[in-house]
Image (tube, rainbow over all chains, first blue to last red):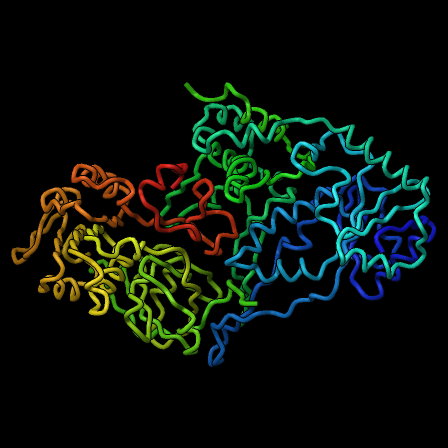
Amino acid sequence: MSELYIAKEKFPDAVRRLMDGSRVYGPVLEGQYHSFAQLKEPEDADLSFQNTRLSPKGLFNPQAERMFRFSLAKGDPEAGIVKEVPKDYSPRIILGIRPCDAVAFQLDDKNFDTETIQDPWWVKRRETTTMVGLACNSPCGTCFCTSVGTGPFDPAGLDVLLTDVGAGYVARGITEKGKKLLSGMVGGSEVSPRAAAKAAELKKAAEGSLGKVFDTGALAKKSMLELFNASFWDEIQFSCINCGTCTFLCPTCWCFDIQDETCQESGERLRLWDSCMFPLFTLHGSGHNPRAQKLQRVRQRFMHKLKYYPEKYKGGVACVGCGRCVKACPVNIDIRRVARTMSAGCSCPA
Amino acid sequence: MNNPYLPYPVRIDSVVTETEDRNLKTFKLVFLNPEDEAKFKYLPGQFAELSIAGLGEIPIGIATSPTEKGFIKFTVNKTGKVTTHLHNMQAGDVMGVRGPLGNWYPWEMLEGKNVVIIGGGFAFTTLRSSIIYMLDPANRSRFGDIDVVYGARGPGLLLYKDELAAWEQRKDIAMHITVDGTNDPNWKYNVGFVPAVTKQKAPSSDNAYAIVCGPPIMIKFTLPVLTELGFPPERIITSLEMRMKCGIGICGRCNLGTEYVCKDGPVFTLKQLSALPNEY
């Protein structure tokens, strides 16, 4: 089934049915903010949310992931041998993810799932997850998804796209996985011409509310070294306090550290989010640090998203325009302004 | 699915202290499972993550050549937590190795060419691998003349001293061993910094490639000498070091612009490096 309508009063039952065979995650209000969490009851999901404060990246790349375990017990023949740990790869549905955040996972796929190397945890979670996205009827002032190749109704990263048309949702199956999910959905009915027209109208209005805030085409034409050596980085980095909030919130910041933790006679190897904002990220054992200066670290973050990534993978920028970094930066560094500076014609040093 | 983060278990077969300052030890490792050794197919220039449960992993160049069977060797400088712990491990202890990782010296391109190897200090490990590889009877005819300039601060800081002496006796490799200085009256070889000795020995750049590994200061002063000898940037090859974690181009820390040193390197030509941000 490729399209159906579900009235809001029937939606909890539909979600409950989904929860029978899958772990369902949705935006849950905790304190002041929403975040993606596994639903205990269908009503836990609050689809009236704007977006989650943290991106949903932790669903695929958890902030702390147990990679391996090992024994350190004296006399244990297996001591010192690092072993895999069991993981839950049962089917999962992410309900209400925003289209931009879903596209972020596709951008991250280029890093985690390559021709030569596959990150096994990332790949298995991607395979066993169905994305039921929720279109953005009213994007925030900090959103700029349409400037970076996605949009408030972009189905590209989704299996199903839901549009809130007031009294119910129009659900459109995008992939085979999504269509299969819709055919098993309870409480759905045919989409009325009125609901379809409303969905189309909302899409147009949402897209129309977002202007083009910078030109990725102009960025693509600039040479990597010209941008790297540009003088404007000094001004851009000036107020940065290297807090790492931007990388923590960003759906396309995937960098991680690997650390061992031990307790008495056993231990675990962990993968933990890391950040290019921190000097330790690149500090050599010898004491040398290729990115010892704040300017180098700030430049790395923007260059990676806006220049290195597109150049390496011959595609768009590694940014989906969710605006989280813009909203949360304590010193008001704005990636839209940085991108405009980078793409401006007169930015090259003399 | 093969898990690229999972190290192969290995047993330390022997530990050799290489230098008089006891800061460099060579670890000979044997795979616990023979099928893992078969999977660990490498070429000189590649590296691996040495993994010690409870402490972590370190990226180290492979010092053996694939022509040496049954074991792999790593020469490790005592620097941080993992290397210090490793230096205190003994023959018989179990640890892990993950790899091989990264690219290798461009052996197909080097076929039929003269090869000039220039090394300094403890950056001689993958150069040892390369020399053993080229001198193997099955490979020697694939390469032209081999010149080696290898220097350390003093005689006691040279790695692989027995092998250096053996190579000195051979006709199919020209060795130019040097030390920065020594008061040993019996020192038979050169005295002088690597760039100066390179200039003095002046290996021909005709049909030749240079592989240069060493401390930044040595590389800085050797490059102009090579340029003067007529080596163009695309025929000067080097290998970079960087802080690494995953070793497979995923964790994000070791990049020079678009290139990950762990996956797209560590071997680069000078020409390639000149097109990248110089953040190393």
